Length: 157
View 1 (cartoon, one colour):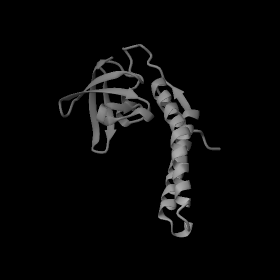
View 2 (tube, rainbow, N blue to C red; view 1 turned 45 degrees about the vertical axis):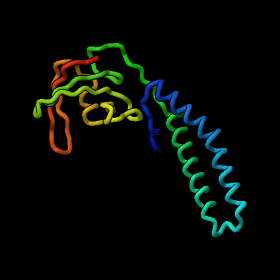
View 3 (cartoon, rainbow, N blue to C red; view 1 turned 60 degrees about the horizontal axis):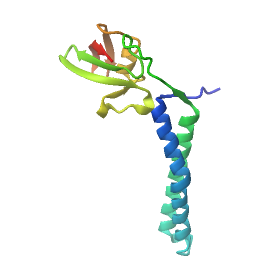
View 4 (tube, helix red, strand yellow; view 1 turned 90 degrees about the vertical axis):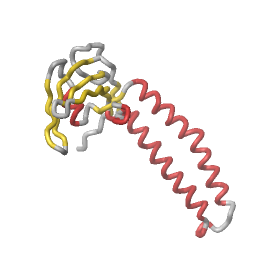
């Protein structure tokens, strides 16, 4: 039997998804239905590119709705623990790359909220996994495609 996937995210992200789902099921679904209706009015459906495009758009819409429903139905809402001595989801962590002698700050988030460009890394990423449950002063080894990288944890917020 397959194990259901569970998705970790904040309450804020869950509310964003619920809002997006509502929009897609109400406003967007009506827009796509109207596009199909207009395309049908152009006549022969076998050579009607507008109809084909509208049906493709409808398929994408239903796929997106199903994806969001799956996320919502299998969510684990994670709240920041409030502790700043041990790294968990919601922690902001300042680390030093010991090889390159560079310092970066990351926020540890669930996989659905990760955005490396905004320094938000998933707790499922190699660096995220290495940092979770660690504390200030610890050194962690991260298996990366380029090899093992060592980081020292400088601060936790």
